[in-house]
Length: 372
Image (tube, rainbow, N blue to C red; front, side):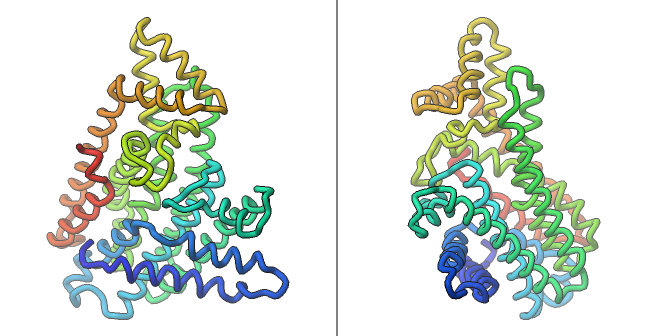
């Protein structure tokens, strides 16, 4: 994407994790410390790096920098690179904690971190792996802040960059609380489920997937913080929400080979996705013909044990009510809205080439499979 070397990103992410963990990785008598440090590197591998690439693109093509000296000098470029890598390290931290909350066995086609740590420590009691996994997530989150603080020190807006990175983390944390809260909501009494789902998407996903990369990238280029944040929210929120809806869709219409995790996992976990909310609403409004399916769906999501047959029935209802097709249309509309906001930016903020590159970066967040 835009000439950004993904292999170089992968290498630098591992270097940063290793550098910040190495001082504790060989403590005598504490083998689990080295195990956790090793797992930190392993868990950070094989991401798509879309967030890092968006941040670097936003930084490179902001007008003030592009007009001054053809992007950044070598030192500044390396610092932008490190801030982008720190964002990916934070994502890994969030995923480690997310997998513990969801009790997920697989991530990116490999054992999830807490499951791997249970195996590596040779403790069949999963509480050991879970405990170490929680601490691994905390360690990675701390490493991400350390890396940002060190890299941002080279920029005039150091304080704002660090503050926004920390604010982003807090939004994700509260988004996770919202997500858990929505999963224990009494569905028979809940209102505006779709709005609730998309609010969770903004906090838990869009905040660090698209909003923060844009804001941080712009601030690295010297764009005034309030302006950077305003543009990032207006453009980043819709594409970030679209990204999460697309991810929800892939959980239903894709394969485990494509996603690296079991298909139908969101249904099995009882997640209140916007697609589920739309399905439930459609059945509720469908009258007597849909009454049986509506009541069954309420019972199925209230039950903690959700079998494969039930998961398939839910997926079928998502198709038959038109919720899948509406989600695809919603994803496309949100993507177009985000691109419109970028193309509407003043020339004092983004060059024309920059606008086109960011719009292409947005496209990468939505798999082509969604629109087929």
